[in-house]
Image 1: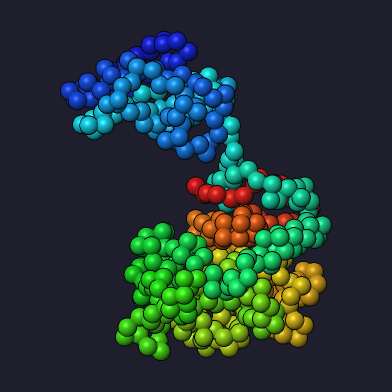
Image 2 (image 1 turned 180 degrees about the vertical axis):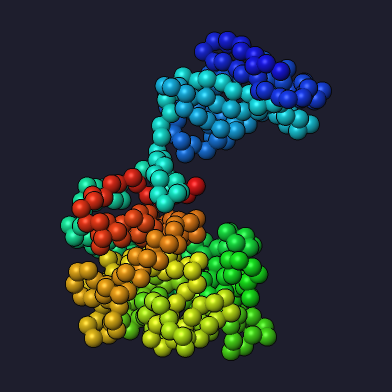
Length: 406
């Protein structure tokens, strides 16, 4: 079937190409579709518009339809200084649907997202002013501005807390139900725990969100998994990737979900106050391959970048809370804030375990929990570590905040 172009006022309706003859039902709906025209009302539409909302008279006027018919928008694309809308016509009683139609509308397409190439992937950014103060800065000047920015965000959106009696520490368990959901491996909406997830096969065990140690905001006590007492898989708790003793258990810092993660309680205890790095041969190995010891613990390859970005986040967000003499050999009190051996390891992990949707969703959900006011910059900009500590002559370019990856 050839393309059929029908000029109708300011709108062009385009019948879809099909390789076989239409069914009778589709033919009837296609005939209905020919009677329908779309007319632009709004002068512009953003790329993040809700497609259902787009059919309202805020954006378009639909002519030739009736109470038994609805228009379903499939996609909206820029077409020069106009837009091209792809849609189907549906009978609400029989559920019969036309072939895909298209219309050119006199409406400006506002792009709020940008795609940036990074290590063979495309990072998708949404416009935001969060990183505007950092634009075109480089090296230590960039780092100083980033530390200042994070301090401001922390003070404005987290440190002040909420109403009297509200527990930020208890809130962590509620944040986890949105920020640490397995939508990527088993895709079963259980807790995504870096100590039990097996990215290449069946998990040794899994947690529902009520298998927590302690109460959530509603006051409900968590429940242990039956038959797993005093072993992996019994329950999860709140692990501080940077041990609390290193920052004197600061009552605000200890509640930061960007580095306080839900993990298996047994493995967390085995890790103790050790640093994350390259573990020795005598390290204990968990069921998913995590290595723990008294001095150095090592996550599996799948989550090394995730952990590294959280640890670098801590260095630029909470460095002023670190207690001298309690840091082991990981953090420093002055630039570069992380000792060379660990910094080299974290940058290597960051570069090898590249950003994925678990990083991105976690960052965005935690940001939402903090009133859209506190982000992990090393997730939004995975090249940031190199810009600060390696390629110090390359300026930072602000693209907004990271919302996707292809």
